[in-house]
Length: 118
Image (spheres, rainbow, N blue to C red):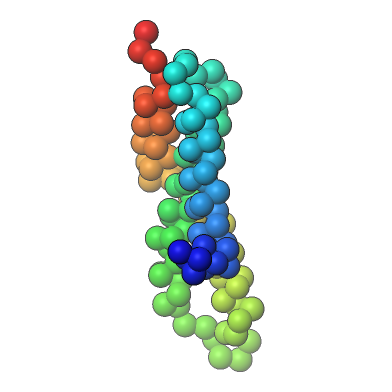
């Protein structure tokens, strides 16, 4: 278990995923048993978009890992680090521009599971 936690601490995408998951859980716990306000719905929507961004980053990572670098000025540990940051930003940009629908589904499920029927 400690190895998994330390691996997540070194991986920025894994860390962001864990933070998004914790934020969604916290919002869901706070809203249990009551109607959700617009502010709470906004927080749920933001957490769902962050979750989608992390998911999309994870899906894009293998695609970018397979790209070849140019020999003279490319490669090395710096490029690996900045490439992961670039892929993370691509995931955020895709999510902000509508994503693939994961955020909508996640937000809808969280809201449906937390609201008390009227």
